[in-house]
Amino acid sequence: MNINYFFAVTSFLLLVILFAFKPLEIKEQPSRDIPLFSITSFVMYELDVKGLITTMNGTTATRYKDRYTVEGIDYTDSSKEYIANMKSKNGIYKDDVVYLDGDIVYKREDGLTFETQKATYNKKTTVAIADGEYLLYRGENRVVGRELHYNSSQETINSKDVTAKYQIEERKR
Image (cartoon, rainbow, N blue to C red; front, side):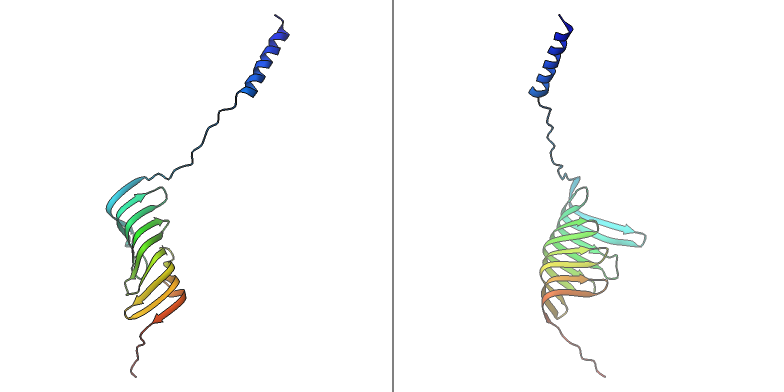
């Protein structure tokens, strides 16, 4: 057999392999968000050198790589001047921000309270944002509106479509 025939047959077989067989396709599955653990009826405490700064409890919680999801969340931030407590049906705690959904009640230790259905609380800035309609009250004073932006440390409130009912105290001279 001639060496030319050998190379011709080998080249032909390599060309057949090249065009007849497709490369192996590896299908990549999208990465799933897998919980690290799940707990029921829990209390979580966050401490620093000054003492207790955060308490979070709920009926069930699931820990993911980057967040906690909590049902029946009860979150208290005592890291700033005023202690603030938030309760909601559902919550997500991620990067010092609490996302709340369903029957939210925000209470501050000085009596300021607001109720809404969807809210976000940033622990670092102490800003609470209610996305929809809300009711805010302290004592007999009432404010109803939508899109509340409440900065607890600066004690400022911004809102839209506000209706307020408040009592003015007269000072005796």
